[in-house]
Image 1 (cartoon, rainbow, N blue to C red):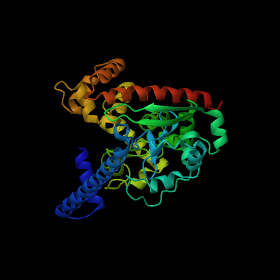
Image 2: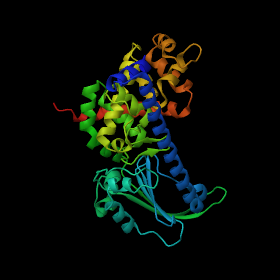
Image 3: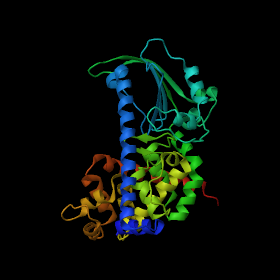
Length: 364
């Protein structure tokens, strides 16, 4: 049904014959395929350069970390949004200058970091003005940051087949920083909650679990932004089914936090109200929606289908015979990937946190 809907919508938008539509569709698919190959090639080439210096201790930017290397790759700064840490590391034995490193973060905007990222394609003028320091620590004043942070200096051995000695300064931020980082996105999450009838707490919990509110989040799937939107799957689904567009969103769009949350909330709406709409119990449908956001509705269906097929038609009947607790237990034990089992637990836990916050902050 979804496939038919997409084709009909495209034919409405592009009043052309079937042959020219098919040609257009193939060109769109080829364009994204070329983009993905180009991204992965840049990722691989950059990783090889880093590995020459850092060996098994190589790290590249990910959904929860943003990593900046010096030109010679002897030093790096790791912004660890998930663990609320800024980590300075050096291989060259020249020591680390904490004030110089933090000043660089304070004077580099998120938009500039995205524009000069060694793996991302050239972005068309992302205008995010918060500094890198502000994006992780909530402040741009170095003195204030140092006062409230815990700082640990040490020399570590990396281990592995080519162990290295690394000078390290670890700046640990308060544990509640992740919620502080979430606060600027409360308004758009509230707006999308009302538009799509999705709990605001779920939108925020998904964003936290996907990126820890790292505005530079990327992964080599490839997926981008706060809610880790894959352009040609969730991104295209939202464009086709909700935005009356027939193409995937571009990377610039997905690195704009408010727009990224709109795409993420839109995809949750599609999962909840279309793909999984025949699951009768709200809580059972919630659990399946969370899992499907990470692994797709087909993999969720395979857990419940009598023949383990990736078919919702046969799975929903089984789901509706189970209690919500039984659905949850089956998902966290039978989902094909351990990552998704853990993901469901993390999102559910984070959602409870945001629900409690809503109770505390709700006006009387």
